[in-house]
Image (cartoon, rainbow, N blue to C red; front, side, top):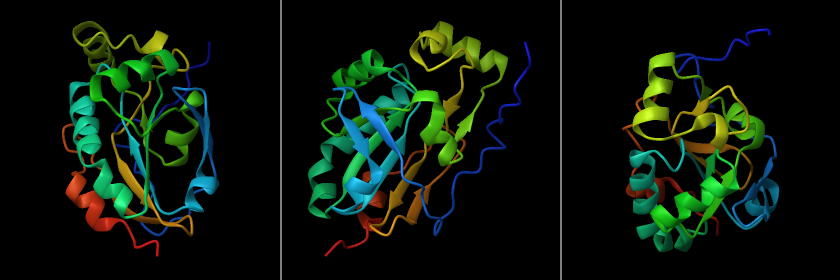
Length: 188
């Protein structure tokens, strides 16, 4: 079997502010399809990548976001959280975080690849996630590669361009709700 050269966490750079996002769509935990171009007709879109329901830092981040969701909605923005986990695992995230925003299944890592945030953790890290945190990446994710997204946040303006990003390979460092709210462009 050919070994695919997946990016390491240091090689994934994330899209930059000013870059235009290609349209994408994905299915949420309720089997509804989210399409970026449709959402952008209503206002800016906040895209959050998270690793999975097994990640305590991700769950805390999404819970904080849920707590301030109304403030984001008041700025006219839509919020989506993107994970390589399949629907049954997205439902666990929703239970743990009470997220009422869209949790999207990034089938085949299409969205995380588009944003250049996909990486393959080293073997020891993968073993730790699967044993200590019960991530079960092979079962939960699209394929056996056990890749993950860097937990990044992007705000996309109605013109389809990235207006702000929080990108840090250190999974413990996340965007704050305050940063997100301050950087949502006026959609009026």
